[in-house]
Image (cartoon, rainbow, N blue to C red):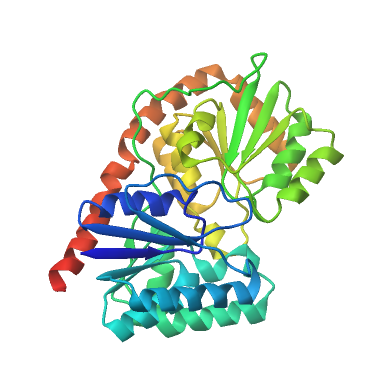
Length: 369
């Protein structure tokens, strides 16, 4: 049997899709992932499954979504497939339409609460269009899953559908060791990894670095506000204290994370998507056994407090943030407690345990075909 996973992201750096594709190889003889090439895309790694990227004329705005879905529709209409997977709402129109025409099972993987992302805040017309797409299709979906219980609860409240929860957990690592060195002069290393988009607390963190001594902030990733963040860094004369790495291949990312002394996830309360966020970087930090600092959003707060692996904060004041981070980096006794708790958390919060939910879902679909 062949399963096709569709996503508008660059599949070279989409680790959730990669993990799911690798797991589905245990059930399907052929796994295909379809994504796109973006500006600054890295070379596509050699995957054990089939991977294909569209090169599009448009890369943002309504023309991008239209072009992607039209091309995806015609590809899926004629390519051999037994099950289709739509990753996020922006792939669902083409995938759902083809599934109806060809009478194929369709699975919806909601990476986020799409209609509540910060980029749609204040854009009422665009938001209404996506909400209309969501309301038109989601009530007809038989199979779906998402990244947190809170997001699943919202979809059930709105559309009466029961979504499975499959979190963004990484593969388990035992005694991980970095393959290259980043640290100089015994300085502490703070890391943020992920998309550089609005509402991630990055401007606040950069301003906080003015008051944090003997530490370097690594910002790993790319995104819409990257140039703005770099300009802010230059204007505050923080080039020696903040390093922008750009996109890093998934195979190298852990070697950055492993060397950090603190991992940050400072999402702001901009829409329900961030409010219910349970980002993969939090779990990457846990597998690297580094203490974490997160904002007091319910899903992240619950993980950090349950496993006692760092601090939860409510402030977005740069100076207050700098004091908290300075205290965390200096408190060696508490660091040892966090490190011990991180070992236990890393054993539980790993893909090897989470993938069972995924495989059970797809086994049930195969049995009903």
